[in-house]
Image (tube, rainbow, N blue to C red; front, top):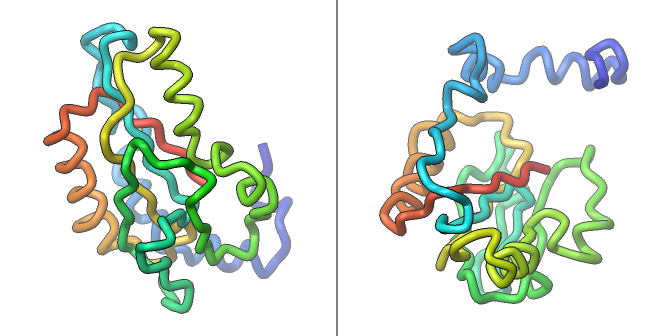
Length: 167
């Protein structure tokens, strides 16, 4: 794993001032403290995708890459859409988009979920999935408003498993 000293000085300065650290450090282990145990086998579960690849459908407004602290909105994506139809509006200069632009399944593996459902490895693919733009330098609205709204929608749809694909 890379260490902070491994990145260029300008990136180190940005990362040290990145406001997300104050949210991530609320607990000693932010990942496991946000996990919920799975109470049924995956073969009986409904699975949804949440990505930070900045993907949207052509009929949806693209993510606004000009917002200095990042666009904290989200896009709802129907479970029956072809991933290759999705457009990418990600502002990060540190993320090479080439692979995802060739195959959206790298960041939004909806086709893989369908294959898993066919094989009986998961019970169902959710009716709706969600996309955020990554590289959010000002996450307050994301944490307090938009992410909880997506969580409510997923709960209302009785989604059991959410696969987060961060980029």
